Image (cartoon, rainbow, N blue to C red; front, side, top):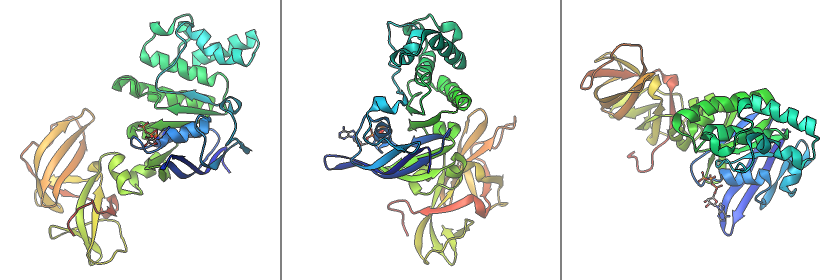
Length: 351
Ligand SMILES: Nc1ncnc2c1ncn2[C@@H]1O[C@H](COP(=O)(O)OP(=O)(O)OP(=O)(O)O)[C@@H](O)[C@H]1O
């Protein structure tokens, strides 16, 4: 059994099931993200763990103790929401000290822990400032310090970085991971940003319509998405409509290399290949040819749209410091079988 365990956890609002039979076991010190589109039930799940929403069914255990019906204050978890909710009339140090004061921690111990926490989030020299004198990223670090200073068994984060601009957000992702590693607090984070979930977490839980549909390490999730939804939601993915015939995938009369599958002849499928797994070559040298219709420079890599007999295929190439193929060029495309997985056909795809 894990440190934090959810068993058949469900929440029904009226006749709408927001969370359905969620089973999850989180190890001590683990960083787990709940990832999914708006309305899939991530926040409701987190709030049930926090004790802010009462489960309709199921149980939550923390370190072997059943906390399903326990008051939020008794659970003693650290919580950080997307709005920083710092006390505006208190300094940074006072904000961080607040939870310790509530717990009647003696002054010297309190001061020591506040100082240590501010050091950890790199805000030691900001102790006497007020929240209005801080940037968004600094405020969010205060919120994290305030949640962690009470040494909670579990830290719950609900979209903690979503109010930050793109660059700061990326920096804070590294920061968050660094802070979490150094204190070792078991952490559950809700996010709808797949890049964020992949970059910080030990494991990612994907939720779709109230259910958990895959629980895996980021790398596994990316390489082996369990559902068609995950393959399109996590990273960029080409999905070529095809038919399974004679033990292989066929599209536009061409055989497409893919992993093996046991499917009936004539089954409609999708062949899923990541843009970076596609090999771009000179015309006539690959599986099929296509024309580059557009290309985009994205700093560390290039992205190409290639019009082919099997539809538009997106290809990415690392930036090697030289100009790659131009728009309008005729190129060949190919990939090794192990790079392509078979996924369910897109709704409405022709057989
Ligand atoms: N108090 C409530 N009463 C009725 N329905 C609710 C209530 N709270 C949430 N829901 C519904 O439950 C579903 C899941 O909501 P939840 O907030 O968990 O989604 P989410 O995945 O966190 O989405 P978002 O990323 O938009 O916050 C939604 O359809 C929402 O409308």
